[in-house]
Length: 306
Image 1 (cartoon, rainbow, N blue to C red):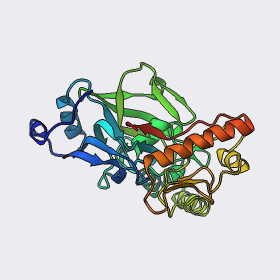
Image 2: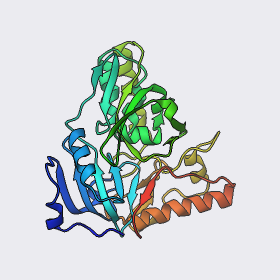
Image 3: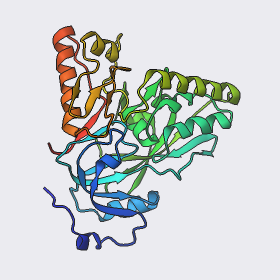
Image 4: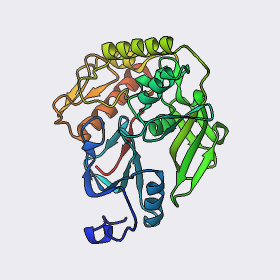
């Protein structure tokens, strides 16, 4: 197990332009506002800076790439490694060769609005994805009938050595809320090109408005949450099953299953521990399986030590 770098060891990095921090509280970087610390974190200035950082990391260093942290829980014992913080409010989409290009650090709703502004259709659903492009690619995020990889033309990835690779959808095993490189190589998403047909910008903007109105009405967005906790099983909805089992409002510590939407766990006062949230996830899974025979699959990526 690697030990955390000391301040002196951190100074051995050369030529970095981003921000390196030690013992970073991950509650600052996940939407649940709960969880332990990472031994260190790095917020790269851009892709070239990220490559320089990765090239200088010790071999075998545990890495956790984090966007908006909307499907992530870091256990209270923390993450023994480096969290790479990939959300950049300054990053914006662009038009490149007739495709919408967005780096992994771009928030997904920005892509939806950018496409609509430029008269391109098919990306409206991304307005309802509370994460970054990198996260949407990693889990094939979707809502309102759309899925991320249906509109992907190609992607740019980065490996542990800092080398960049261009990949196409055929290089991946893609499914419902799942995406994995078929070769098994360890790479992280750096950017994507989205292939979108011409459309009516006004119609797209109206679709985005309606999607967001539905989201606000149905989900507890005013409270810290991580979006849908469980995948919908085939032909059913996780929220319906959880509610049918009488689990709405079940609480532990500062965490609670939302009364508004049963597939959400909320942290109303910001006092929940990661262990409280994980206990609710496992309790819901076990209860639904016992009472309905359905094995719910979590969308939440849980890392770190208890």
